[in-house]
Image 1 (cartoon, protein in one colour):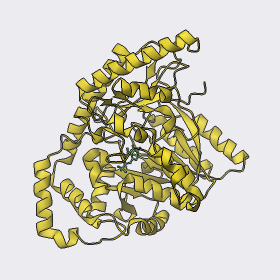
Image 2 (cartoon, helix red, strand yellow; image 1 turned 60 degrees about the vertical axis):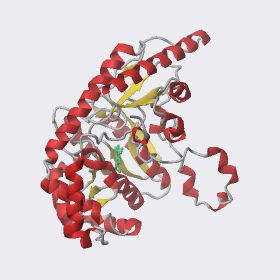
Image 3 (cartoon, helix red, strand yellow; image 1 turned 90 degrees about the vertical axis):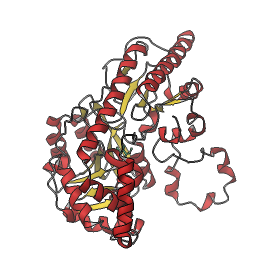
Image 4 (cartoon, helix red, strand yellow; image 1 turned 30 degrees about the vertical axis):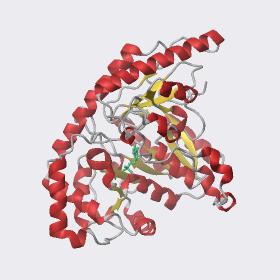
Length: 447
Ligand SMILES: Cc1ncc(COP(=O)(O)O)c(C=O)c1O
């Protein structure tokens, strides 16, 4: 089955981008200046074609929910309404349901975090956490340091608050500490105010890499030395294919790390339940920001998650998810090895949803995308994951949703589109066939 659920979060059911209609907008002169940074993602523009059943979509990051125990959940929800309906259907506090905040602390303990439920603020997905943290800390022109590439939704929030993003490269061990120091030093020299480092340490979206454990203390030390807060975004941390977890940055620096968590990838993304664990001093402002955004997160959804955690083998369920994703990761890596033309390279994720592919010099993944969709395969082109136009030689492939067979077929189609593209470019003499150096480097494409 291929439907909206193979596409990017936030695009399900969305209309295709109406870029041609901008000039007709009678409100054009009324919008706040910050809306200039709000643009539709590339995959959204391709929504109508990419959602056709014959297209294998490796573009979206939709979790595969097929393994959820829907019968049990529907019984639980019915019981919840019957037993506790007047609470579940009522407003709650902006801080979140207390019992759930306690359970969230137990979830975070799996990655070494020892937290007090008071410092947890429940959000409508971690996307809301990102928006609130940016709102709290960033004035227009302030700098946010982020890995290059970085999560599209975070870049969207930073743009919406007119923050300037400075990317720091990664290698197969995640964010490069030397690059971070250099970016911070340079921003200081230019008199820029760096507000925070935004980092996805585990099973990165889109790069698929994980920050090496021995780099973690160093990254924290560099940020502390430069007086910069760390925003740690960790929705995939429990999806390590061998059941491995890594120590959260927040675990060793509670006063300087804002931690974002989510039940979207480990339970159900549609419930939109995430959280922020803030340094104690920041929590009060976060609650006020949450209150002005939504009054309170949905009580019903919080109680559903809370009941699920209390009564279901949620760790066993995560194990099932991990096994499904590992099977798909194996399918995509095997297919890439079998089909991709020489000169391409890719990362090899140990968890999460994504592979980051680098294609030979001269191929532009954004320009190639319509041809790929015509060949019935979709991917997310690399430029969307940078705030500064890099990434034209990269693409993100998501293996989380399609079946292993569909993944293999999608990669076969993609490889053949790439072959034709390279043939064409060889004919015009502007593509080199030498191997791309650094086999798994997701660093910026400066070519
Ligand atoms: C790195 C990262 N952060 C945050 C989010 C948003 O997740 P949520 O569903 O909790 O809003 C995503 C979703 O894909 C993500 O990949």
